[in-house]
Amino acid sequence: MSRLWVRLACALGLLALAMIFPLVARLSGQTAIWFVFIGMPALALASLLYGIVAWRAGGFHLRREHPVAPGHQGRGR
Amino acid sequence: MRGRSVNPSPAGPLFQPPGASAFSWLALLPVLLAIPAIVILGRGLLRGRLPAALAAAGIILPIAAYGFASGYVMEGSKEVSFCGSCHIMGPIVDSLSANDKMLASTHYTRGLVPHEHACYTCHSGYGIWGTMDAKMAGLMHMVRTITGRYDLPLKLNGKFDIASCLNCHAAVPSFRAVEAHQNLELQKQLVSGEMSCTGLCHPEAHPASALTGQTASLDARVAHR
Image 1 (cartoon, each protein chain N blue to C red):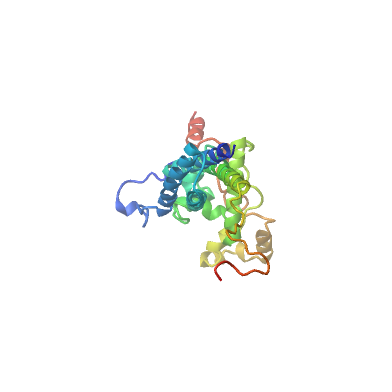
Image 2: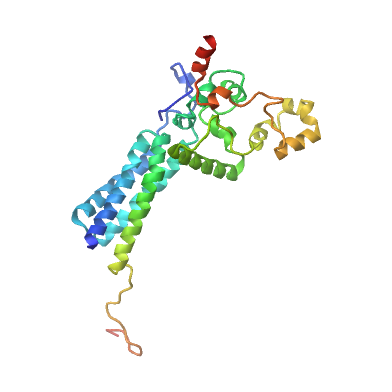
C-alpha cells in the first residue's frame, strides 16, 4: 500500500517539476498561473504525502542499535 | 521573455539597454535542479520506493528548484511584457507607446520610467512593503484572471500610492517650483489620498478605452468611421 502512496507522491512531484519548464521557456501570466496554482500545491502535497508515508514507516523515529539499560555502561566499555 | 511588448525597436546595439542580452542564470538554476530531481522521482514512480539518500534529494531538489523558480517569477513579473501577457492588460500596455498625452504614456515614451519595468515602477508603491503589496496584488490579479471575476472598465483597487510619484518628483526643482504644489493644504490632501494628481490637474494615467479592454488601434478605427 505504501508503494502506491510513494508512487503518487513522486507523480505529484513530477507534475510540479513539469511546471518549471514552460515557465522558464516563456514567462507569462499563463505559465506563472500554472506554476503558482498547479505546481506549488502539487509540490506541497507531494512533500506532505511522502512525509506521512515515511513517518508511518518509521523513517523519522530515533533508533538505537544497542539500547543501554539504566544503570549499565555501554557495550565495550 | 516573449509576450506583449510595447517596444517597436529598430535593431542595433544602441537600442539595447545595458545587460539586456545578458544570460539569465535565475532561469537556468531551476532547470539544473529539476533535471536530477525528475530522474530521482521517476525512479520512485517506477519502483514505488526510494532509498533514504535519494528520498532526501528527491524532496530537497524540487523545493530548491521551486525556490529559484519563484525568484525568477518575482523578478520577471516586474517586466511590462509580463503584465501585457494577460489579455485584459494588453490594451493598457499597448497604450503606453501610443504617445496619447496620458500620464503613463507620457512617462513611458519620454523614458521617465524604466522601459522594462514601467508598470511596476508606478504600481508597486515605495519601499519593501510596496513590493510586498505589489506581489500580493499580482497574485490576486492571477486569481481574478482564472475566475474571470473582474469588472470592466478596470479600476484601481484602492487609492494610488502617491509615494511612487514623489519617489522621483519630490526633489525635482521644476516640480517644487509649481505654485500649486507649494500650497500646504493641497499637499496634505494629495499625501492623504483625499485628492488625486490625475483628473483635475494632470491627465488620467491610462485612456478610458484601454481600461474597457479595447485596443487603441480599434478605437482609432472606430473614431475614423
